[in-house]
Amino acid sequence: MKKKDWKRSLAFVCATALIAGSLSPYGPLTRVKAEETNLFTDGDMGDDEMGDSTDAADFWANQKWYFEGDTWNCTSQVKYSIWAKQAGGCGLEIDFDKADGTVCMYQEIGSLEAGSYTVTGYIKDGSGSDGTIALYHATKDGSWNVSEKSTPLTKEYAMFTDEFTVAEAVSNYKVGFQITSKNGAWIYIDTLTLTKKASDSAEETPAPEARFCIPRLLRKEPIRQICLTGHRPGV
Image (tube, rainbow, N blue to C red; front, side, top):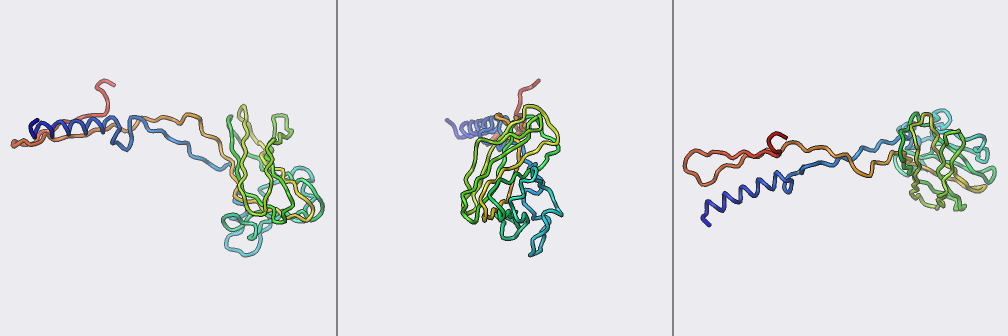
């Protein structure tokens, strides 16, 4: 094959590969992953309220989380604390200093679309009292749906995760946690997230039209160009 012929062939192959997406940063279709938004307010457990302060802010004065009934009665205090942080400036400290019990804390979400949701967070039981945490959320009739998955607490921060599904769009929906421990325990919880699960098949978006101009090679006369486009005429 003559030198100019193989170079011309190479240029054509490269242009074709780029159009097909083999060498393109886009490819024929770009898969777009849905951006995850944390639906919890104050999932960082007081970081915004603490600011640069070295003292714990008043959890009750800046209340974003609530307790079901009188379940907090087994505690002596619930507060933001710099000692409770897993990340950021502080976390939430729950002291079981009155009795064994289960604290049911939740947040009311303004609206949820139909679909599946993932809840994550970090928790530890500094006293080693063999506590547990379980996800719970409201049902359509206002009762509580407690997850069958119960995560044991450890003396060091560990991540927990669970999921739930709502069959149709809902408003003012309660999502929270049941934390069970023994008298004398101190529980730290931080970095909570509530996110909608992405669809099993990511949204497909057409890539920008690929257009490449390849000069004819080894011509002594003024260069002419072969212009190739990334889609068929009439499409």
